[in-house]
Image 1 (cartoon, rainbow, N blue to C red):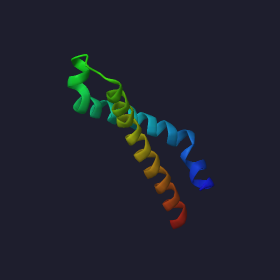
Image 2: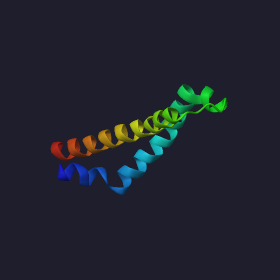
Image 3: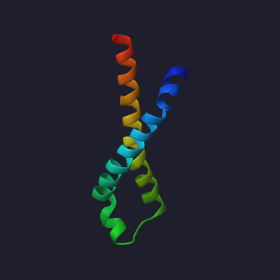
Image 4: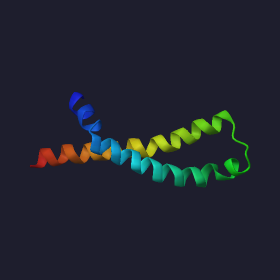
Length: 76
C-alpha cells in the first residue's frame, strides 16, 4: 500500500490526472449540469455533483497509471 501511494503521488501521475480531470470533468459537467448552470439555478447539491464529476476522472487516471507502472515492473 505504501508503494502504491508513493507511485500515485508522483508528479507525473498527479499532473496527468489533473489534466484529464479538467478536460473530462468539464465535458461531463457541460453534458450533465450545463442547463442548470446556464439557467443560474445551481444549488449546493449541484456543486457536490460537479465536484465528483471532476474527481472521478482523476481517480480513474491515477488508478490506471499506477496499475500500468506496477504491471510493467512485474513483467520486466
